[in-house]
Image (cartoon, rainbow, N blue to C red):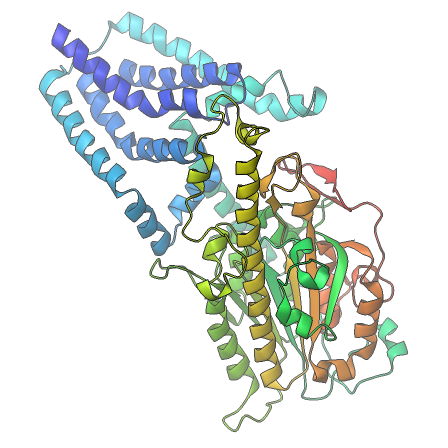
Length: 603
């Protein structure tokens, strides 16, 4: 190569390796020196292999097809200080139009710079790089064999890692194979593996759908006159002829127990529920089994448990059980659009509606779920004279955005009761004039405690405003049910909680590795209409007697069926919040970030 070609070659090679070089320095998910070294070696081997196979100019043309992946990796490193995760790839592949347009509008300058550099790259490659091999055949073959040996060892070590983790588990880290994780995080290996896992998951779900096509719980419902309370132990229904109940299951997002006024919180965060407190049954000690929506919700809707975690792949959901029993089912959601498990349930409903944020509104709130709810209740309940039509009962799932971060985007300005909050505030400005040498939230302590306290106040105020709006939304749902004049019951549960810099650990958001009681302790409310209460007095009495029992969200599969007077062989009275037989648990087991079964932190 000429001197000029060498300079251009090095420049193009650095540009191609830019996301990997940035990853070595910036990726916080590379936990130790060994991982960073193997990450860098893997990156160099990938491109060295290409140079061994292709001539120089052809090589640079071929790797240019990875530029889009490189851009995604660079943006992810800048924003999250981590290599691109499978969840991020999943979001990119199946993102809604509004999310995609929002991303482009936010980082349009990055896209513009990217395409400008891409043009210069192609010009330099064509103008200065000769289409010749970089080394003689013997050297290239030797290099290829060395690289092949390296990748073979890496695959073996990564494949053995689960086995070694069980054999040599020191402080939750397998030191014999932990470093090799750096290999699978190197771009574009992480992209390819992430896409592979996503496609494999989709194929697995499709396969399971076919396997579940003939599955039945044997669920039944038989309308009859109300019966005496002592017959409830025999599972007899409690509804009147032509008055099949409406069962609404509202899944709250990022809702922690102790920030609800109705649960004893000092602030007025749930005035609507407080006004109905004689009708509201609130459970004190309910714990979810995980701290991520994708983990929690499938276990809430199925009979799966930490002891039998794959059960939700072998059985259908509680919604399907209602459908079996003759209920008209509906799934209405403004989140989790691409969760295969939830979409499988939605596809089996009589009515399904996903409402996405199209990016046209500054604040996207859960009230978008009300119009579809009204449609379901109207079409399946009343005739043109608004007389009750004897028809199927309604089982409706509302999957809401709730209090998910960014909290200030979960409520309109009218609910900005607690201030200062995050509206109009750039959180990054909170981190000016701090100790740059420290890491994490330690940068704010102790000499910058004032900054820390201010940040905590803003986050808490914003979160409480989101709870306040959720309270309003629940009340709106109740009003819609009251208007039907039918027996109706509403069950609200938080899928998981949230950390708000509550203690010395300075934990924030959810999905943390170790987890906290703030993430696992969730609210559970039950409301019943007067028409429902008139024929289900014993169930309501049992729930009021059970409010102090320590239970998990895994009780909801059984409890929802019992509240809807649906019987099936799998229904367990000891898992029903509406039965006197409900058993309290001394220890509740759930999952940590590695999906390992652990005893949950409880109060």
